[in-house]
Every structure is written in C-alpha cells, then in structure tokens.
Length: 573
Image 1 (tube, rainbow, N blue to C red):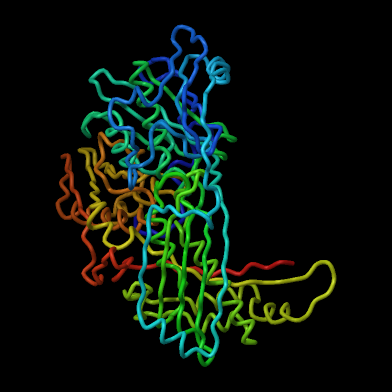
Image 2 (image 1 turned 180 degrees about the vertical axis):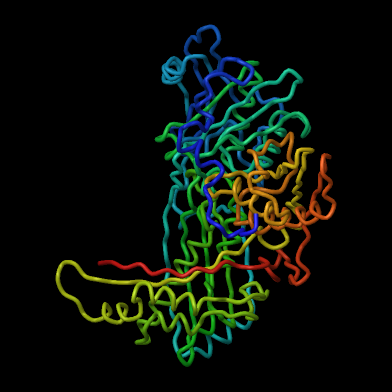
C-alpha cells in the first residue's frame, strides 16, 4: 500500500452494514453447539445498607443463584485499588450494586424469578453530596513557581467555582459478556469490551487460576467511549463464576435502562479556582479539584491524574498549584469517558479565562490567544512541550470556518428580545498514552506480526476495534511499510490465547504507541522477508529518549511524550 493516507472502506464495513457481524447477544448457541444460559443481576435498592438475608423463591430444575459465596478465587475485581467486589460483600454501597445473579435457560422465567427474590436490608446513612464527602480514595498535590508571591503582587485576584455533572457514554450496544467452561478446564470469556487483558487479569483473579486458566476474546463491539474499559472486567468475573457453578455457558447482557442506571459515568466535579492577574496577564493559578468517584475507586486514580494535569488549561502560566481528590460517595461508581477527567478541568479553566477577560474589558478569544502555550514552554508538571503547539493556526482556521472573531465582537454588544445570539471558543489538549511512565513501567506493550507461507500477514495485538477502526488502520500501517496490498494484511478481534499484551484500548494510545510498534515490526519483517515460509517478528515499547523522567509522587516531569491539540467554536443562533 503506497498511500497510507488514502481513504478506504473499513475492513469491517460490509459485515456491519449487512447485519452479518456477530455481537455477544447474537449467539444462539456456542461454537460447539452448547445451549447458553441467561444470567440476570439482582441490584441493590439502597445506597448504603447491610444485607441481612436473601430469600429465594423455589427455583425450577436447572435454575440457580450465584453470589459471593460461589467465587472460587478473590471477591475483588482487578482494577486499580481492587476494592470493587464481584458480588456485594456484607454491605451494599450504592443503588444498583450487584448482590447476585440468577441463571437459567429461559430469559423470561429468569426475570420472573428475579422479581420474587426478597432481600432484607438494614439501611445505613449514605453520603451523596460531593461537598460533604470527607472520605477519599486518592489525594494529589503539585505545582511549580511561587504562587504565594504571585498572588501577593497581583493587580487583581479572581475566585470562582464550577460544577459539572454526570455524562453517560450511551454506546449503541449495551454492556454484555459471556463465559464458557472449556474441556481443558479453562474458562473462555468473551463479549463487548475495550481491554482484553484487563478482563483476563480480573477473571483469573476471581476464578483463582493462573493466567493460563482463562482466555478472553473481544467480540464485535458496538462502541465504548471509555465505558467498556473497566466494566467488562466486572461482568466478565460475574459470568465466569456463574458458568463455573452451572458448568455451562452463561451470558449476561444489560438492557438499556439497566445500562444507563448502573454503569460507570463521567465523574461529576467541583473545581475551585483562584487566579492572579498582573499587568493584564495571568501569573498564577491555584486550583482545588474534587471528583466524585462514587462507591468504589475503579479508574478514579488515573482519571483524576489527567484532570489535575489539565487544570491550568492550554496556557503558559508561570506559577501553578493544584490539589485533587477523588472522594467516596454512596453513588454509582464512575469510570472512563473520552478525555478521562480533563474535560472537567478544561471547562473550568476556559470559563475562568472568559470571565477574567470580560472583567478586564478584553475580548476573551484574544485574551486566551495571548496566553497560549508554545513549543518549549513548561507544562503544569514542570515538563516540556517538546513539539510544535499549533493553537494559533488552529484558531485562525476556526475563525475562517465560522467567522468567529467578528461574530464574537458583534454578539458581545447588548441584545434584546427572547432569542439572543452567542458564540464561544475553547482550546484543549490531550496527552497521548498513559500518564507519566505508565507505558514504560506498567503496560510494557508488545506487538507481533506473523507472516504465513502464502505471503499474508496477521497483526497480533490486544487492542480492540470499538468503532475507531484499528482493524483497518493497523493493517494500513503494516501494508504501507511492507509495500504489499492491504488485502494481504488482516487484524482479527484479539484473543488473549493468541495475541501478546499490547496494552488497553484507551488514552489515544492505539495508534501512537501500538501503531508505532507495528510500523517498526513491519520494517523488521521487510528486512528479513523470505518467500514461502512462515515468519514472526515482535516489537516492545521503548520510552522516547527526549522525555523528562516523570515522578508520580510529586507530579514532576513529562506527563506525556506528546499532545493532540483541539480548538472549537460553538454558536447559538
């Protein structure tokens, strides 16, 4: 493939458009012809309570109840702090927490029996408000410069707070996983997911086996947007435990209401900002960021890390102090969503800059542009923007497309009437890859290429296609470097029994990290290519030499090797 930028039809386009793609809810039987049992979860009705007893109705033959007592391994889902239970412990911590699963052959009968289960609770006082929550999972603080001096010398100091609420990913396909006991004793788990090896580690822990005791396959997945990063690990454990007890395949697929009610959302936030201005320029930012993690920690550590790193926005500010807490409440646990914590603080900082400009009598767009960071400037964590920062050119492009600057000045004039016009502008970045040294120290990605004797090449990696197109873009990279037709390179849905751990499908890392591994692997394969024989090459992640070492304990250094930049204008007509 000579022109890697050529727009082509995605490799999975036709089966999806024609309805031939098989999602987890589409299986009529397993591949070897076994019937699939339905599993449905019993969710807590209280935000915080002791579970005193669970009274089951008479269960017909072949129907069974599964709860924490059936877990052969550890009742902790392997996420970050590992505090999320597979099934509830002695207490439930939020409305919707899974107490157990009812399993049987007929879905309607399972639903009928589920509705007859009686749970005796002892209600406890819940914590529901982010403002009053005093228990936290994570607490960070960092900064650079002399913030106190900047505030003491400021011409004016601005203080404001900003609240953001929940957002749901609302992928087209709801959460769903399926587990199948295999003849060799392994547990096969597959379904709608982003991160096959995350599910692999979680299920192995819950089942009490080594890594060899389970394997995970990503089925065709109808969208994720972060919502299928950690949650499939929870359902995957639940169906695996149920399949082990039933000694039969078990599938659990959420209905839409269940998905909206009980799956992870974007973290609500409370951001308090204090900003110093001297001679018309922002000289210091002091930001206190609180994220509502919900009942369990899930991914809140890394979500909060991104949020507080982005707290000063895209601006060159010499003095910065940021604190951040992920607080515990008895609400639905929050998790990943596009942007991963940064949208909350970008919103706060963008609003802060607009309000300051308004008070100073300046146009907020020009005020923001004067503060844009540029290549070589210091990041919030005392790292460097090593590559060009194209924000000025991007602002000009947005202006050309929307007539932004003229309209912004025009709409700022007094308006009357019921309907009034407005146009807003914002600028953001997204740090590519895992925060800090996560790629080097935690993920340690590996990717492989396998060339078969007929000259076709298979990509072997664990990154899932969730609509973004890696089943097409990975082969494009490989075909381009090998200079062979794209049709001769393919990438199947990852199965942990066959592919190495190239890391999760998160953080915009698939193309930047794994795509580069595959590019290097393709060059290596090109150099040793032999016709008519099977060959395999692999590549491992190596941290770029230019990176300033990052220390998470003090948030210092290059949080990311590079950044994607974005500008936008939104007009209210």
